[in-house]
Amino acid sequence: MENGGVENAHAHGDGNGNGQAASYTYWVRETTADAAPLPVPKKLTAQDILSTQSQSTSIGSVWNKAGTWEEKNLNNWATQRLKELLKSVGSLDLSCGKAEISEVTKCVGDAFLVTVRNKKRVGYTYELTLKIKGEWHLREENKTVKGHIDIPEFSFGELDDLQMAVQLSEEKDFVQQDKQQIIQDLKKRFLQPVREKLLQFEQELKDR
View 1 (cartoon, helix red, strand yellow):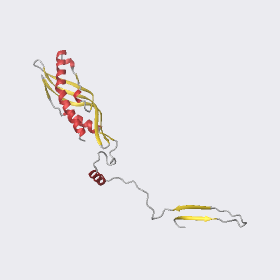
View 2 (tube, rainbow, N blue to C red):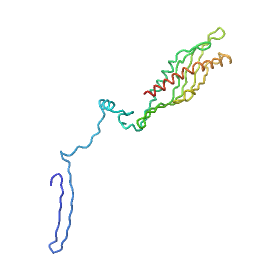
View 3 (cartoon, rainbow, N blue to C red):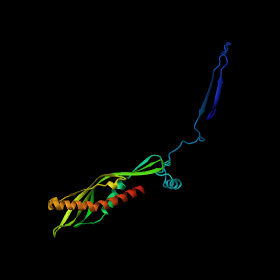
View 4 (cartoon, helix red, strand yellow):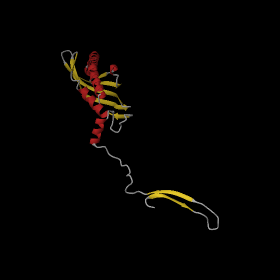
């Protein structure tokens, strides 16, 4: 018997008239050159990825053709893009001066893209601190204004309720009345431009 086969054996009697029967059957298969090879994992090439993307309408990674649950972290892109957009607000005219966002000193949060059943959903949660500098014309004198705007935690779809808290860095240079006027002016002038930049960020996030 070579490579494989079925073998049957039967025993009849013991020579003394006592009949006994026994049988066995077995199958043996040895690996030969003709046997199918074992499956080997294949790494996707760039061409495989392009071909799959052109043929499939599913959303998400190449491996997730069925479009089942997949979550993608977008923190790096989101944090960098928020800083770029906010610093592009530029110089704004105040009632008695002007000011601008010189630096985004705090930009902490998370942004993500989730694919569920081939449908895309995005979201984020962030909190910000914006460094402000400018000039304030007060009683025939130009004074430097420095401070920061704190924006507490906000999330996707909540920008209509965006909140701001303004604090001056050199309060001793202003009397209480002037200080309150500057704070209110900064809050009033920066709220809408900042909200518009955050709305642009939301749209770019949705378009990814």
